[in-house]
Length: 224
Image (cartoon, rainbow, N blue to C red; front, side, top):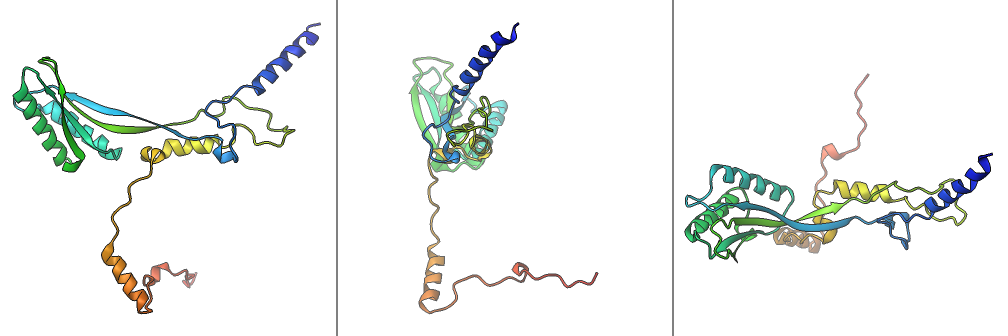
């Protein structure tokens, strides 16, 4: 006697599931690979160092060295050193600032990638030295939370979840999420090499690289 009552309920649940909007999906995408797009967020990666008259303590030096390693792995941009101004220990703040700057340069951070600014400490004697850089993070889309019946498609449209896994894998594996936000700057051209190749071209000489024996696709003639 319960079966007739359960059937409409089941149909209603199925219809509501089919009508559920999948998050992060671009509804007007033209191809399956465009249904989902990896999003990028940015925020300050920051470390705060208490100021000391002697510069950096051993623990602070270790923490700042790890910070520099993270900056290099993340291929970060400019590191900003924000020194407290108007605090009780202006000399200690300056010494801590110089010690931090020297340690970063010693850890491979180019001097032109370090910016020094001041901020108003408002008389706070415990105002720290702030070291920060802008870091990007990729947001992985949520896949497979809602599925339609892939065995039936009266409109012959692409299934809503198709393309999500590819986008999620790319977002999770990309080395520098900043590449999703903007292209990298072009590296300087090799002007000397360019002149050599143009000179060969003008003279009608071969401009391709010499062939290497290891690059030949020759089948081994070793007897077996």
